[in-house]
Structure formats: structure tokens, C-alpha cells
Image (cartoon, rainbow, N blue to C red; front, side):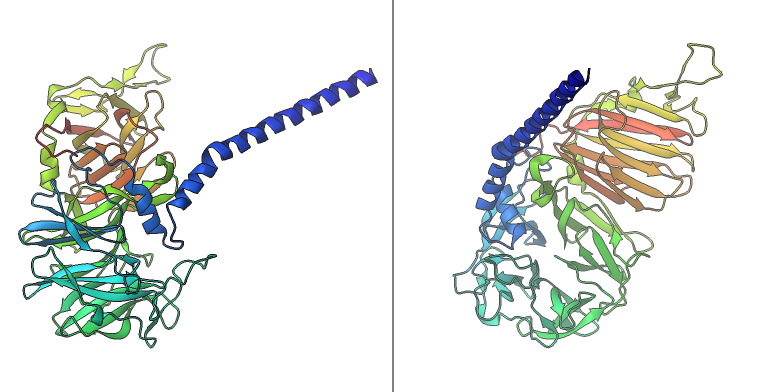
Length: 544
């Protein structure tokens, strides 16, 4: 008996060891077949250590762009928008320089000659022309940009200037190049030192505006203060756009990457990625939200936007982040394509709002689902303990022309689904109770309410959230009392861009669920869906 037990344990130990070896063998095989080749390929395409954004941009340049009418423009790096000569101009970082695109409708873009190309090996921009600013003054177009050359004797990153009379051919003015003065600002590695790398300074991201009060040009940029802190925004001033004097930074305004500064009404706004600060005076005080950070106007998926004024509206153009491996919740990379252009405006309290430009909405001119026709949803039943055995009641039904969770009691969960195509535009108007939480689900998998991507409108907490099974981005908003809520959403490929009340933008990449159903659910109150259309793009829109 004892010998049998010993033999049995020996067999179990052998089986356990075999399983462990099999698992280890599987891990090694995965590394050899997939992970290591991917790393080698990525590093092979990233010869410039320390400049991740640009090596990633090169990696993305080889990737296929969307063939949709709204996301068909490849975006290999940061975007800089400008309006001039009766057209929209979009400059995109590419191949170390600035690619130049032009459009009259924000939909169809033509490629022009490169606005900037990297300089000779000995020039201050011998490696890269980084993100900067485009403006016009007295009939001359100006580009202010940081040149990068880590072998340059005067510093790795310096401010540079180029001009043009036709907004197509730009002339660089190397004699106007300047770097940190060492009195107000200094250089420091933007990323930790790595083997074989050279110090990468932070001296970049110019944005130039006219200060009427001071009668001078003000250049906001990003640099390290001599104090070694980033809690104030660097500033340089000029009277002629040629000679620049570095002065004390603007206190109370934290440094922002790839900033854009503009005025709407009485307020100045400083944008940086998906946040903004505002002030009545360029010198401040600048205010963010109650937590001390900037106000949010979108999610981090919307990448490095810049604003331009076309004479009647402010238009915001940026990229949509790409994610490694084309899976949700992986490492973010450089932009993959240009996002839907937004019209940006200020509400009655001076807070920034956005909405999609009308030209994009007009593309979706083929309605395939309309609440007017009372389409039949797939309705989840409500099960109640007091009903006779086997009896159920539907949670959604039509009341007049509205789709209502008519039989739902407080705190009951009501859910319904509609079949929709992979890509579409949703327009929705819903009225909810003040304690209701209303959710729009995109690409939900049948039988799995937790799948897909959710836009959650919470009247209880005055909050809107967009989420996936792996990420969530909530934001506080103000809802009008007893007013219906509108939702406009564009589902295209792996991109979801939503707007609530033509004001609050929520963007997300959605790789993991390439298709699925449109769903509506509500808990804690009543919801009346008063209008709902699902439309696809017609044949008259631009394509890749």
C-alpha cells in the first residue's frame, strides 16, 4: 500500500513537471514566433533612440489607413491646422519634415509639396522639424518650429523660422535660429538617458499670438525653467517676429505639449492634447478645473489637435491614436488617421464645446433605420416575482411615436437591441428622468451586455462616460433641466466618436469588437427615445 502511494505521487510529480515544461515550451515558442520578431522589426524601424513619437510614426506609415469618407487621411505624426487662401491647410509631421495637405471642404484633401523638409546634417533641423505654429501677418505666412539635431554644437533643439508668400513654398531663415538663454530656460533630457542616445532637450512647441495689451507678439512654448520645474509656461516676446527675447514664464499655467492658444469672445484658451486652460488675459490668471488640472473636452484618444479660424467658425483638427497590435488597452502609438474635424465654440459660461462639422454629417445620407417606422427591437424581458409563473413583461415598447421602457419600475434594468451595420452614424434624441442612467451600447455581442463600447449618460451624477471592458473615461457635464438629450455618434472601422448635446465629445478606439449590435438600456427611471436614425455614407462622399 505504501509503495503504491509512493509510485502514485511519483507519477503525479512527473505529470506536474511535464505540464510545467509544456507551458514553458509554449511561452518560449510564442516569444520566438511572435514577440521577438515584432520587437526586432519595431526596433529596426526605430533607429533614432529617444524619439519614440517619430519612430512610431514611421512604423504607422506602413499601416493601411481607413477607406472611409471621414477617416481616410493617413496621419503619421502631429497635425497643425491653418486656414488661408480660401482653403484649409493641414500640416502633418512626416519623414522628419512637414507634409502639406489642402482642402476646401474638410473632406477631400490634395497633397502639396512638403512645406518643410529636414535640413542638412550640420543644420539645426538636420534630424527633424518638430511640431510648431503657422500664422499670417501682413501678407506673409510664417512657420515657427523646433529644429532637432542632437549633434549641433549650440544644442539639440532650437527654435526656427520659415516664411512664404504663397503658403506653398517656404524659405527657412537659419540666421534667426535661437535656443535657451540659460537665464530663464535650460535644456534637459526629455526622456531618461539610454545607451547610445544623446541628450534630448525640451525646447519646442511654439505658439505665437498678438498681445493687444502689450503691443507685442507673445510666443508660448515648452522648456525647462532654470528652477528645474515645469509649473510655469515659458514665454518669449517680439516686436517684429524676428528678434525674440526670452522672459519670465507665466506662473500658474503648467507647461503643455503641442499647445495651441486662441481667443473666443472674452476668453483665451490654451489647448494641450485633450485638456484646456482659460484666462481673460494672456498674462493670466489661467484657470483649470477644481482639481488643479486642465478642463477636459475629449478623451486621450483624440491626439494633438490644433485650431484654425475660417472666417465664420473655429475648426479643430487632430489625429486618432493608434494602439500597438490593434487591440484595446495596449500601448498608444502615434496617430493613425485624421479624426473628424470639430467645430469648437464656447458656451454661455465660457467653457469649450465641440461638435462635428456639418460637412461630415451630410455624408451619411442613406438612412437604414428610423424610429418613425417603429422598427422592432430585440427586447430583454423583465422578470418579476409577483407575476404568475412563466409570465413576463417586455421592458421596451412604443408609446405613440416614442420607444419607452414603459413597464419598468424604479431601479429596474431595461435593455433592447437593434441590428446595425458595422459602420454608421447614429442620431438620437432621448428624454430621461432626473435619476435615470441611460446607456448607448455600440457593437454589443448578443447575450453579453458587458461587451462592446458604452456611452453612459448619468443624470444622477451629471456625468457622461465612454468605456470599454478595459478603459473608462468619465467627465462631469451640465444637463439642461427637463431638456431632451441628443447623441450623435460615428462608428467607423475601429474608431468611435460621440457627441452629447452637440457639445461634449467622447472618442475611443475599438479594435476588439469589429461588429455587433446597437443597444439602449436604462436603470433608475424612465427613458423616452423620441428620435433615432442610423445612417450610412452615400456614394457621393470622398473615398480613399
